[in-house]
Length: 355
Image 1 (cartoon, rainbow, N blue to C red):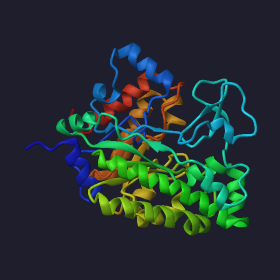
Image 2 (cartoon, one colour; image 1 turned 60 degrees about the vertical axis):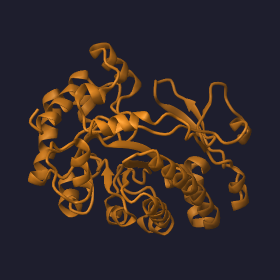
Image 3 (cartoon, rainbow, N blue to C red; image 1 turned 180 degrees about the vertical axis):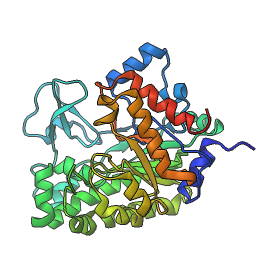
Image 4 (cartoon, rainbow, N blue to C red; image 1 turned 90 degrees about the vertical axis):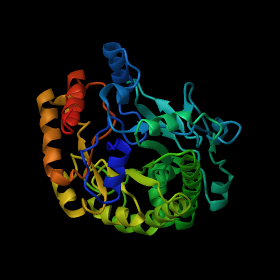
């Protein structure tokens, strides 16, 4: 019986060697192409799905979510025309460049106590959608990644980054109330997504900057780690087969052992600008499946196609004969990226499995 992409990823996430190094152009469960790159893809190929066109090893399906209250603008003192709102009621003011955000409006900016946090309506998860695509992906032998949520990153989206960081030190009860608010929704969303048949729950929780952690490792371990541990344990107890993917940009090497202890199975992006994949793989590659990423910040947009190919080959060489990594872009592929670089990545990644 032929090994499928789903079989291969299961082996890797359970600690074994892979038959090949899987690759995807997506970023976990999220599209890997920015809108301009997606338009270029459709114009040049006539196809709708990059995963199908390039034959990557992952498919994606996420449940829709929406704001749980009546009017998100009511959460803010003032709102500019054209502001959009996400499922938490966070306002997003678009910048002049497509796909970028100029400012975010946190709905808990005026919160003073845990009671104020309780009043914020949690997002609603739509479980009535047709999940037949998941069954089709499984029938074709693909693992399916679905959006699972966030904890720390959502917390500062809700409160404002500076305010939330101050709360961690100056008003811990308020910070903890916000973290438990985001964790409760992440748990609900993850359980519903796993129930729909998803194989890998993709969580997004940037904890790093280019030079270090956004907050100290001690604060992260005190406030964030226990919450993630509880979320993952709750979901895993109900769905033992589900795996957990964490996207966390920046230099987070100080907490990689903690990420493993929380129960995550895959870590992305091991950001090339901030961390050496060779070192992280050598130290932690047996304990967690690492994303081996080509830089969306430097190599994809500003390197040559040959440099992209060299980056893929170098990452594969680090993984060695065990093939314990997952080839991916480090983040969304930006509009400046030459289309030839995208093709180079996909072709070189596919070539690693003999195609």
